[in-house]
Image (cartoon, rainbow, N blue to C red; front, top):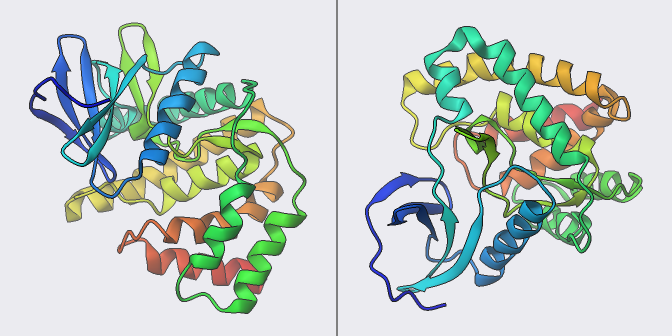
Length: 270
């Protein structure tokens, strides 16, 4: 697992990792110091299983250890992300948002054995959320416990920047948060990412654009998804929004935290 090869230049940065050139047809996703080996191994294994099951994901290769950081070698994928297309061609928002829903629905149809359940960490995550009263945490925990267990593959970080359009079709990135869960919860997570989420290191102008495009994209995305999957309803998605928002707070995104807290309080006061 030790890296004997010299890494190349940085070609992308995200909240948890940097992506470096590695070889002609490969890249190294090198996670920041502090991301555990267990988390990196989870992403590696789930991506491998998803690829074997026919999910449109980049091919995954070896695990790497480089200067106290862990990484994964992936197939190098070339093409624009869906987010880049939304920003440069906003008139295509309906088409792209419906395609996002098509891809999400396809994920939810894939049976994968041995997937970790969201219940394994959500309950402990809710307990760790700061600035929530014991009463609110108890209500959020009750929602998770009372919702029937549904064991389908869910991504749990699915948004337009995770979809890359390549010569062989769209590929879906970043499977560290994937687990076995209720698709309604996965849809609730994407709703929050589209309507509240902020691109990392975004300028004021990009934040404003993301707010507008995100709301419009969510409308068309949810409309299409509900057409495809009648077992998911607006009511089920609504049920999941408060616990999903609470877990999102733990990601420590300063611009989002006040809106997430407001959402939780509003949902639980109804």
